[in-house]
Length: 318
Image (cartoon, rainbow, N blue to C red; front, side, top):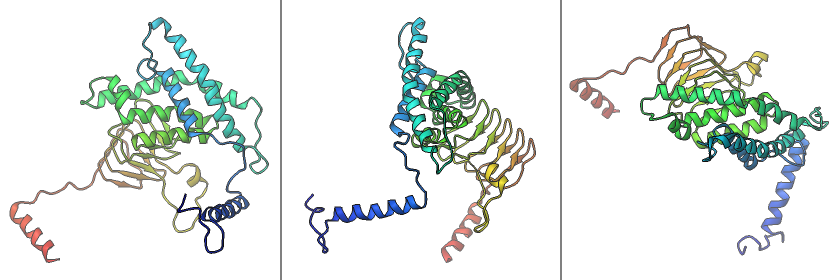
């Protein structure tokens, strides 16, 4: 502390000065109603613990570490559910408390958090089926995969899919902060950023995956494949213009069934990519694509030695 504690020129320690400066900024933020004063917020650590319990219940052996007799599997899952109910209900309650109050004009019944958790648990069978379809699509689409177990345990796309399927249900049940924490946990692990509001059909395969971004209002059909660094994003309004109602509520692409989008492509706005279309690598796309179409950049040219030498000479002159 020898470098921090000594008094400054005005007789106030560095720590006291920093504390005072932060107090001023906090008070300014509260005056702007940037932050809602609440007792607690959802905890990233506890949401991560809840997600581990969900994964264990969905896949007792592969992700839950269950090694016992198959007849004991249901009891193992039930125990995870009991622990999950406590863990998740606390985080949901913290978020609901955040949205309550006069400043936000929202109130909830005292048992709303437990109601949300019960509704969520009722969707876990559907979530497991969707994840299974995603894993199967990856196994079908990647000849390097040796087994579906390898995909579930190791593939970034499958990891991101599991997180998204869970987060999307919670988002729809009215806890967007908890849902967003889950999506960001996936982003930290995989580099894949899927907003929990995005609607994604079955048999979804993200190959490699790093840098994929999917926005909140994107709608993706069945059997869609994306490669790394694909963006399904929104267009920024020109200048300082505020987006209209459609721009706010439906601002990301619609990707219909059986579409393939190759690496580095960027698709922006409420455009529709028709069924069975193929979007080539590094395409910048702002308009609809008819079903069955192929969209590609001009193919790179291979220059002969003489032409290549001439190009190098021109570059050297610059």
